Image (cartoon, rainbow, N blue to C red):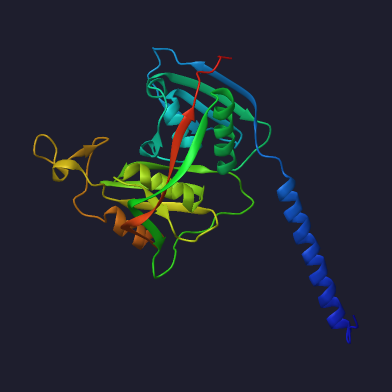
Length: 274
């Protein structure tokens, strides 16, 4: 190949170098082993323990469950709602487990979820079958005015799960470094049907929105006054969740039909404790 100018040669060299770097980066990502827990303890929970939680600890290496049934732990590991799991013996709903699992390195939230799923498959001999079922759901898309969510710093693995607090009569929710798949899962847990992500957004985002939650009895308390949450009256004015998502995050949520992932338990065993 003949280059007729020094500029053309430099451009071609830069392009070749960029391609080589891209190939090496892809090869490195492909050769990176999956995250695993190098230390993992699973025990039956004491009857005196009242808590029932499953969460990631700060640092991006550790998952902890305290007093949680296997079914609940599965919803976190596979990012599905309880209504998406079928099959299995009764004890997956009643027996409670305490798990402490630490990985050999820091990982993203998705990597930790996958590691937790592999731990369940190893220690509980859990085998599941995935099924896609077309059903009535909520479809999550980008609003016609575009997304308003800031993309999270790509190099930052820290994941702050979406959490809420009641503030000025409204529910205020924030989270960091969330994928749209995770956000759809989070929304599904609080709605009457599953949310299917069709946004096409592939980055990680910081989430911050607030709305007035829908409450029974028209938001009135047993005494006829306003309903109370954490000692605060629920606001009668403010956006509902659909309006909040559109106006504050640039997302559109509407009822429709779509493919929902279901897990069918084919085999599971109680683990030996250690």
